[in-house]
Length: 99
Image (cartoon, rainbow, N blue to C red; front, side):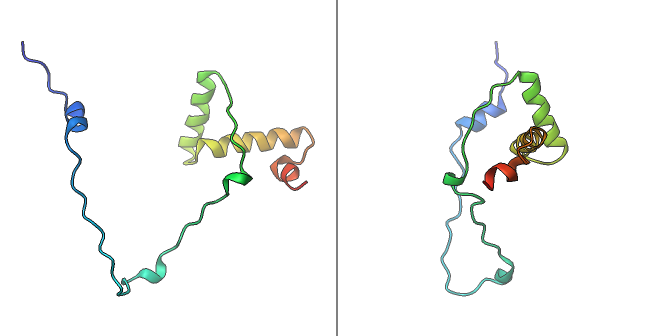
């Protein structure tokens, strides 16, 4: 009996494609004046990592909201936290972090 061909598994087991190597050049690149250098938004010392356990359907809903609004799920979590802190009289995220 012949087995079905699984293209995804074949792609995973195939050797990686050869990537072109970068060539250093002392000559300016045309349009380089429009290049923006990105810096990290916040250092790891300014951000605490927190694990939140929630029902799977709730986690899925947060991801769905983030997807439909073209945002990251973390941004939706922070917005919810901001609203909660404001409701509790703590001035939201800015109120807590500015103390």
